[in-house]
Length: 290
Image (tube, rainbow, N blue to C red; front, side):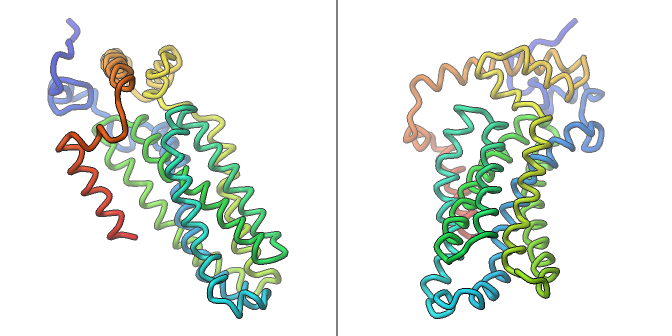
């Protein structure tokens, strides 16, 4: 006899559900498909970390090539900060892009923008083209920073979701480490800073290619009434016994989401005490970290 899903305690992935069906629990290394999906999506975090770290070494050589940069603290600060300015805009627009076009297309768009920015920086004939390239990679990073965690979370079993989503932070710090290694590797190479900045396009292109073979987020597909596609994705994540319960749960949840979206406004989020406090904690941590 199949289990019904009357309360949150018995929903797929919850402790109540897994207590009833311990054999349906997904361990961290049980499904290589999920790990591969997480790794590919996490490349967005790698780009974030690389972009923030590489400029510290590249700027030393940029000043050697462009006298006006060497003589202007304002230009130096602009080159460094323009990526952050782009990331702010990219992150602000990323939510709408994700909701309208899906997590997969948002990632592909971020990769294209980032790759164009990398080419722009590597070929920059003057500081102003370089600044434009920094702004473009910032846009790409901003979109990727809000897309990767959502995509990973929506495609992950709830019992290992926290571990998988946190891997995006690991990729960010890994990207920072990689940027320092690349800076060191190209110190004696002609064109120094152009290689340092331009090589960042390689992981963006790699993610774009790999992402073409990955599916859209099953949750987004449910919200868009593309149930058959969503079930196909879920069948690669869960075994047949759990699949039916997951489909039933996401069908009900997506219907609730569609009903809420009709009347929801941005400021409504802050009317709920729980959500308001969660927002303040999350935003506060980001401020402290940055």
